[in-house]
Image (cartoon, rainbow, N blue to C red; front, side, top):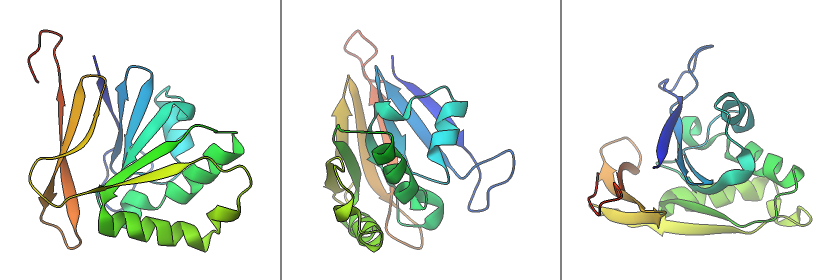
Length: 163
């Protein structure tokens, strides 16, 4: 059964007790990270999650409190010797800006850097963003000051019924 772990529940300004809003969805041995803030390695360790198990990252929108930790996470994964591909999901405008941000760090020049694949989401209702291990993640546009997606996570209960 998949498990959703809340890694942070703060709004734009974090506190000592609450990191910015982000979460991890554990599906078997894989982790889908939803948004990427601060120092992800520390938050994952606190939740007893292994950074090497992250298979996918979903970015809901391009605001610093949702994507600001991505460059550090990618660098940490690289320094830890990651060799498996990583899948990034989000609206095209968000993924384009992420790529521009990473270009500022000249990530294409990092030797033996792992493959990162971008999966753009359509800004439409119930767009199938990701499906794995009996879990479907659907996205829909939501009202915010920048283009943003909300997520619906469905899982199979083992009897063929969606939850």
